[in-house]
Image 1 (cartoon, rainbow, N blue to C red):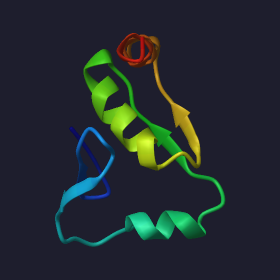
Image 2 (image 1 turned 60 degrees about the vertical axis):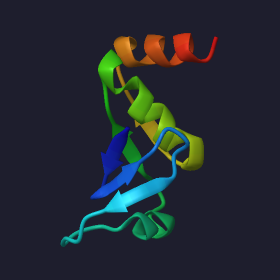
Image 3 (image 1 turned 90 degrees about the vertical axis):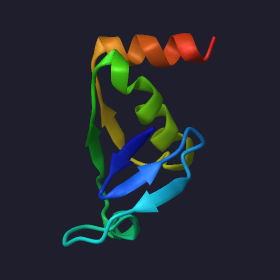
Image 4 (image 1 turned 180 degrees about the vertical axis):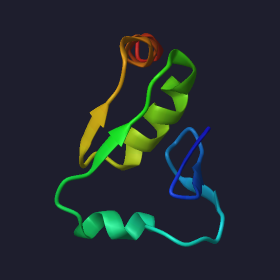
Length: 75
């Protein structure tokens, strides 16, 4: 339902596919003291929520549309 750092996640937040490339790997986040994710839009709510399921460390910056959609899904 979403992707980050060339990794694709399912609704449970599990990695289902990754693409080879140059840059940060998800494992690199363990060595970074401040991780900030930026994502917005109600259409991204499912992707945002799937990543948050297994990656609870860090700060998320989002918008009202995504926040409302995530809250609605949890009701």
